[in-house]
Image (cartoon, rainbow, N blue to C red):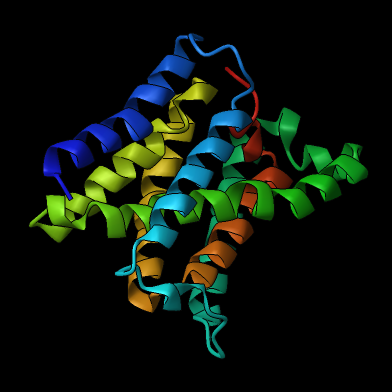
Length: 206
């Protein structure tokens, strides 16, 4: 694969498209490009005979204790932050609209978490590994791209959380070589934020 094309593809998909959305130069809902990028990545991956399809398999053992422990810490810290700084949205959805909250809890993992993890972990690390001789640099570039995908929410908190979150998710993915493990982790942490109110920074422009 031509390195120039890979650099062009990565910059266009992970940087140019989010910037175009940030400046409202793409007149369609922000979910549309996520679907198209997901389908493009899926097409590329399934044509690639060197792609490790073992990552899709359901395993007997997942790092449940580590994932749940990190989730518990996330719940405590973010709930405290919301209570102190944004008490107006503290557990707003489950307290005020339980049906919308349940819809988010059920749909977010499939609609958002799985597609993002496939794109930013399974696709990204396989597709662009030849571009980086340094694994740490690749992790940081991946985290930057993941954060850039969230500039559409127009607030710094979303960028900080997604940059750090990307490092956490990448570690889980690379350590376990399992898309399902990182999908479970991303779904849990995302739903925690949408439950305790911090999710307001991920679906409302500030």
